Image (cartoon, rainbow, N blue to C red; front, side, top):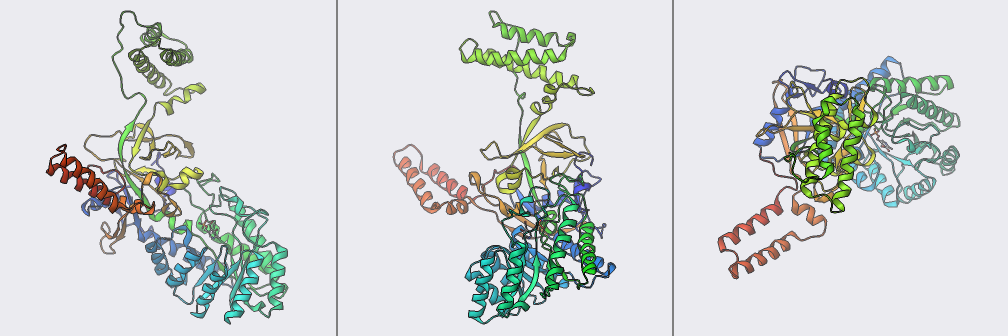
Length: 629
Ligand code: PLP
């Protein structure tokens, strides 16, 4: 627990069980229900599903939807706030059909709606969000077709709100709605002066890509008035960035937004809704701080700031409390999915040794480094030992390039060098002061665990923006983890690695894991991947989408669960098709080549058939490594 901090980032959904396995509690209000992650993996194997696999806990998704909505409802009641909460889920955060369907279903009792930011998403939400009492919010840049689709939604009796992101969209919307004779519900997105803090801070401020300036908002309101449509203006929207790390930014945005709402109201534009956008953060590193991958507040504190902040300004200004909308995506989906992979190997600089005994006529560099190793225990100045060893190793490499040193001699130097470094590390293990260069030893002597997955497919933000995601062994947690390591993936790209972890509050480049055992699988989970990561990945090296299993718990059996659905990941054929190949033609080309070799006697006919089948099976197989289990 101290190393992996499961209870700190787990949101109450994950714990370390007494048997050393990670356990899942899909509904923290019902702590009696606990699913053993190892049992889930066993079931995955039994179903014949290959790793790596995305495991989705649908109960967690439902739980988060209920949490957000009940916290808003309870806070509104407690604050005697006059408006209601009408949240929407922004589908861009995870557009997978099963995820959106589950959210819509769990959101029914709360009239929880959907948000779309592109034409494809709009087509999706029109088909999904069929509850007429919930909102459908449309953000993003729009064309005439987009507006027509929105008005189709209105025709179907749905509360579709078109949020104007730039002034020209307003003119387009008014024109199209008049042509079709359908009245729109209009929202305006304000460009806020307050900026969020964190990785997405450029979503706010004057250079923000989206939104109208105050002058443009006033112009919008007046234009609608001229067109006899001021009653259509119903919503004010703002969004100052995702993953807001500091609660102060939320408070500031609410007071700025509330002031704009109140002023518009006084100008005669009586809006029904204020939409505070997304931004509700997740504590990925468990530090509960303003670290970029954390946030210094809880969901309850966020909601309180929204409700009480809005109430305070409205009461001061003497305007009615608007209904509140939020577009939280990350907070709804992050916890529900986890990538399960298996470690398939270990890479260590000092893993191989060759014999280093003295030999007649050997080079002086070999002699020197051996002498250093032999007298290690008598050395007083360890910094000097480090300097000498490093210098000889470097010089040896130059000498090798100049053909002065043989390959064998270089191998001996390398072996002795790493042995010295290992002893130096042990020497400083409990020291209070460790010289700067020697601090790097931990990293250079650490292992790299090779995990069967692709960072680019399953943890895109880890590569793109250094997003930290919890990495946790799923078993053996009651054993002390003794191998310091980072994780590397199976892509042929040295960026395909995870070397940022949190231990306690400290960000580290290695994390302790357990030593690998022969004939025993070591499973690792990459947690909190449900928001963005699930859907943003690419096919670098042609590693495709992962197999998925959807887990539900049984109400009547606290330990039991079932795999409700298995969604097959991409086959090699699937990814090749996307890249414009024709796998069938490829298979027949290879078969023709094999036949030619059979005809010329290079291969016997039975062998030829076997190779042909093998090639075809690989084409229809999974893109990831096949492991033994
Ligand atoms: N609404 C808008 C307009 C957004 O741009 C985003 C994402 O940045 C969201 C909602 C979702 O934000 P989050 O995932 O932080 O809740």
